[in-house]
Image 1 (cartoon, helix red, strand yellow):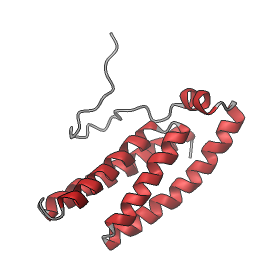
Image 2 (tube, rainbow, N blue to C red):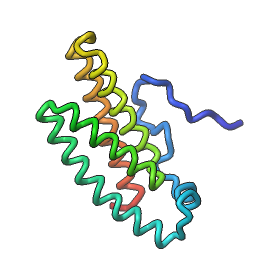
Image 3 (cartoon, helix red, strand yellow):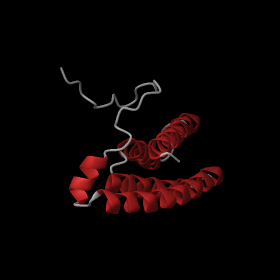
Image 4 (tube, rainbow, N blue to C red):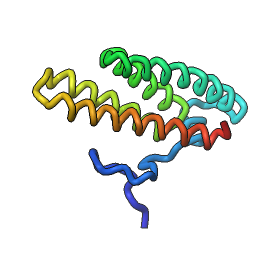
Length: 137
């Protein structure tokens, strides 16, 4: 009997991804690419993602939520393009938390919002590490 892969919104991290790390066949079908072309696209994406993660980390250190949200959005888009589903989900979660924090405009306790964002950044790093492992990097 198939089980749903829909995550509980704020479920505790069990260490197992809620989404496939990489959906190669789905991405290749959606992008209408052969395996070689997809591999080239994936290689380019991983280089870009490393730069975006560095920029996101720098923005995190500087407390620049706007830049963090921009990089989270770009990571989400890049990951969606190549079928990196766990990275897409983690980046989307971070982007959503940062938007909620901006919308709350101080309504939520700052330490709680920072803890949530910190957990989301950690989740994104873990997702990227799993992707790198799948890609053999």
